[in-house]
Image 1 (cartoon, one colour):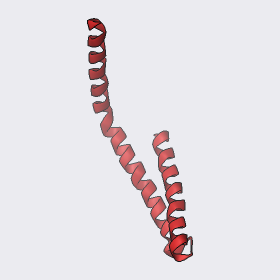
Image 2 (cartoon, one colour; image 1 turned 90 degrees about the horizontal axis):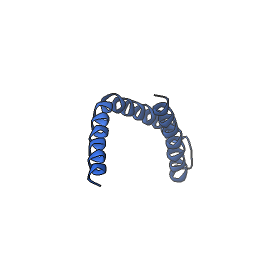
Image 3 (cartoon, one colour; image 1 turned 45 degrees about the vertical axis):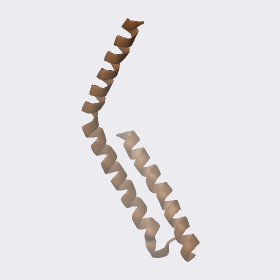
Image 4 (cartoon, helix red, strand yellow; image 1 turned 90 degrees about the vertical axis):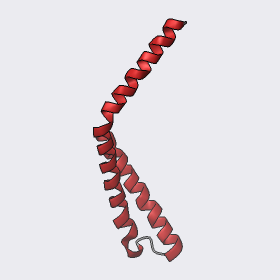
Length: 80
């Protein structure tokens, strides 16, 4: 959970500067129509929501994949 929040915050901050830099380059104003201020937090929230949903849904699949890898690894070790 902490990792998901950290990545969402980092993404929001980076997008804030990217959008602001693009607005500054094209319009000469970092806060042109508050694009960076509006879209960066929205991107951070969407990142958090999608990553958290994936974290909730994925553990079952991740456990299945890990178990399959163990079986294959054990099988390969027995063959050698």
